[in-house]
Amino acid sequence: GAGVSQSPRYKVAKRGQDVALRCDPISGHVSLFWYQQALGQGPEFLTYFQNEAQLDKSGLPSDRFFAERPEGSVSTLKIQRTQQEDSAVYLCASSQGYGYTFGSGTRLTVV
Amino acid sequence: DQQVKQNSPSLSVQEGRISILNCDYTNSMFDYFLWYKKYPAEGPTFLISISSIKDKNEDGRFTVFLNKSAKHLSLHIVPSQPGDSAVYFCAASEGKAAGNKLTFGGGTRVLVKP
Image (cartoon, rainbow over all chains, first blue to last red; front, side):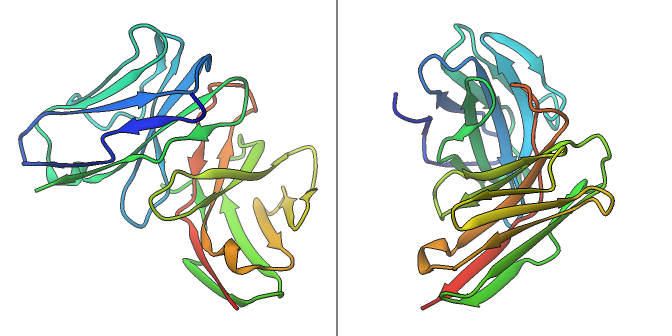
C-alpha cells in the first residue's frame, strides 16, 4: 500500500476487556515497530519485528501486551484485560532500511 | 529516566521569523538524531536527521545543529510558515541500522501566527 494503515482509528474499551489493534505496513517493508504515545508525551517504543521474527520486545509494559506478525506483513498488537493506564495512541511504523513511516495510530480509550 | 528531553512544551512565532526548537539527551550511546513533525490525528512524519559525525545538516528551510559535547541539538526553521504549526519531536537512536529503536522527547508544540 501507499502508506502504513492502522485499524481501528478509535477504540473504546471497558476496563478488563481484551483489544486487538491491527497494522498493515507498507508492502515489502521488512521492519515493523509498535510505539505507545500517552497524552502529551512522545512515542515510546514497545516492540520490533524483522519479517515475522520479534527481535525486541523490551518496551512491552507488561505480560498483558502481546504482538505478532505471523506472515511477516500484517501485525497485531493485543492487550489483555485493559486498564485505564493503557489509554494512549498506539502507533505502528514500518521501514525498509532506515527511515520510518508511521501510521496514523489507533487511539485507545479505556473506561 | 528521560533520555531525550524537549524542555519547551510550546513555542509561538510570527510568520517569516525563525523558529528554534531545542532538545537535550543524556545517553552517550546515541549517535543518530531525527526530528519528526506531527499534525493532529496523524502519525509523525520524518523531517530531518543528523549523524553524530556531523554538526550541521540543512534541508531547505530546516537546519539541525548538533553539539555532541553538550549533548544538545536544535532545529531551526527559517522562515516559519503557518503550515509549520504542529508538534515537533526530537528522537535519537544508537546507530542508524534498520531495527534500531527510537527514543523520543516529549514534543514541542509550535504555533506560527500569520
